[in-house]
Amino acid sequence: MLRLSSGKEIAGSHLLVATGRRPNTDDLGCDQGGIRLDERGFILIDDYYRTSAPGTYAVGDATGEPQFTHVAWDDHRILFDLLLGRSKRGRSGRAIPYTVFTDPQVAGVALTERDARERGMECEVATYPYAQIARAVEVDERAGLIKVVFDPKAERILGASMVGAEAGELIHIFVTLIEANASPRAIVDARYVHPTLAEGVQSAVLKLKRFSID
Image (tube, rainbow, N blue to C red; front, top):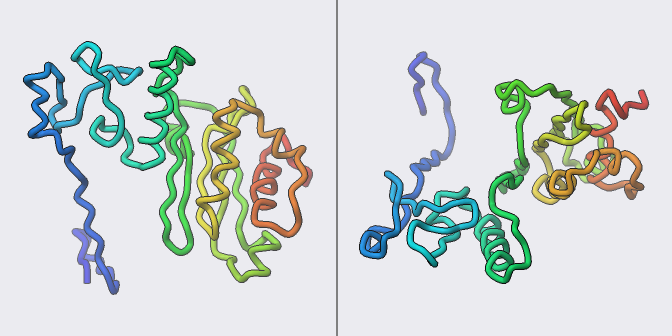
């Protein structure tokens, strides 16, 4: 039983306590190497993974980036191309997706509606319930929602969030669209196999004013 400051009580079978993680940099000798750390012990790097020590780079969890395996792998790929002179792309501006593998799954990428409005960005929002996706009904996975945040002036997706079956797979449709800085018109004009959960992504985009067929 959890009692809130308001006096409300919440009952549950399990309690998950997540206090965060500290980087294991205490005994790396960073001070002797001239590598600066922040107040939490993370290695300070610039947009191209350069530390304060010339010729020394850092990637992954120890840099304070979102602590996901796919982010560390992306760090590696970006730095590899930089060192080989194949690209000048840095780490800033990345749209980093996440998935919580609960049942149903929770997934998202880039900005939420709240993020966009707090930044003063004009946006349209569309939602689509899993209960209206034919495949979700067929496999009895009706619980869930797809939410899309859209910039009508730039005609691009600002972010997307999902709760539902295979949300961690479906979110990659939006990850690719955002990475390509492409219009969601690509989703509207595509042919989605029926009956699939991915149809729900197209249906959600079709709820935006620009693309609505209602």
